[in-house]
Length: 572
Ligand code: C2E
Ligand code: CA
Ligand code: CA
Image (cartoon, protein in one colour):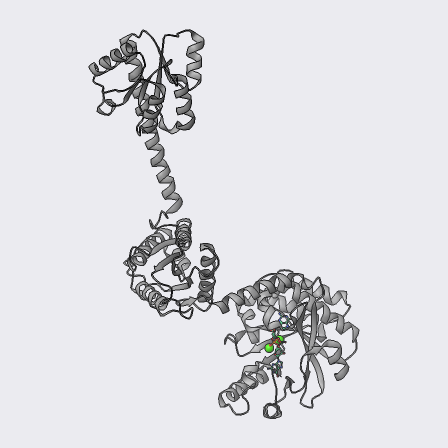
């Protein structure tokens, strides 16, 4: 008999003779049985027993009989796993079946045969042992599953689920702290250049170094591939978040920036830069862990967008911008269908202030916000396919207007976003548009930015060429602000350059602007390109520019953007 079975037997028998006999025989076999004389005591002992027992349970007892004890234990304490052997002189088959049905495990008829009893007790203990082992194995498996569900296999750090849970618990306890998302800059490049194994190794070192920067109260976790979460619980609220941007947060994040700059002992030393989005976690801000994660993520997005290697701390202003952005994006998708877009025109004139054409500029008549500037919604539209719809709508309006004023001598310029231009359907859409309106392309100017041109010169060239054949002209918008690679000017069918307002606004006083304008003018003259000066606001500016050579002008000095009909009726 195994040592831990020694105390593993309970005898519940009201008949003193049988009880005595059982106890003495069990003792002879090395057991130290617990002995009770009625059903209620049996129930109490079994309920309180932490480890599973083999129970010799008499069927008929005063008060509560054996069957009731079994029923009660199985119903209310199924987890106890006692092995219950019924003892009874009622040995007919129906009785045996009914005893087993209520939850007894085995059955020994009275008067009992000691050999049989011993064998059945041994079976009971064996089953109990097996069962215990099974429970332990299941617990281990559960622990493993729990580990896998809560920890990252590569770094051994808690994962996103676990991080969020821990922060959640912390918030529930009204704690304050700071939450940071730390993202490795250009990690993808390292992965691609050096392979996934080295990438994993680097992540491992990175996680360990990050963890080592903080004490044990700080939670450091791996959130996604190259993104780690850090949550620093704080003692008091006041010393941390006086103005939203706290000295504390800045000191902690600069700790991280500095540490990650130190070379990691891989591939002759790799040093990293990180982007960090951080936010204060305070119980007075409504929201749960996910909300704080979102805020830190928003800040991280900004840190990345502004070039990386920096920390941005989330604040209320950012939140307002995000909400505003979201609501604009939501409304914008139905703006076209609800006919809320307007086409404004801004006149362009020659040196004699005679009308030569106009630039089409979109406006949005928002139902509650009023007339919105494209500066607010174009960047949002550019992030989705909305810019394509919007651009096509403008093109449609411009073609429509050109048809309406057929035979007149002015051109219309329309802005084309890179996303629109790079679509495979772009050329056919423009061609369809002019064909549908039964116009030729020679009064239509498409304004594109320098950024678009350098991306894929051969694709750009093919598309521009196809469109040029209809007479459509191309203009480089915001010239001088983008890429300085000018070789495209000779390779592409470009006929016009618009000098960006940035170089006009400080004329004539600013010598640097003047020098840039001189260079642009010289270049345009060499290449035979038409020049348009944007954002001309003063007579002095115009006078200065007019001395440089032939030029066209667009700006508030001549015309503010206004509804198309208004512009055409006053200038034609
Ligand atoms: P942009 O193409 O450079 O357009 C010129 C912008 O400068 C216009 O702003 C115009 O109102 C402004 N402007 C013109 N003259 C002056 C001046 O003398 N002084 C000052 N301070 N500003 C002047 P707007 O209409 O707000 O458009 C802003 C930008 O939005 C445009 O810049 C263009 O990039 C974009 N945009 C406008 N309409 C469309 C469109 O239909 N499609 C696309 N893709 N973008 C558009
Ligand atoms: Ca433009
Ligand atoms: Ca421009």
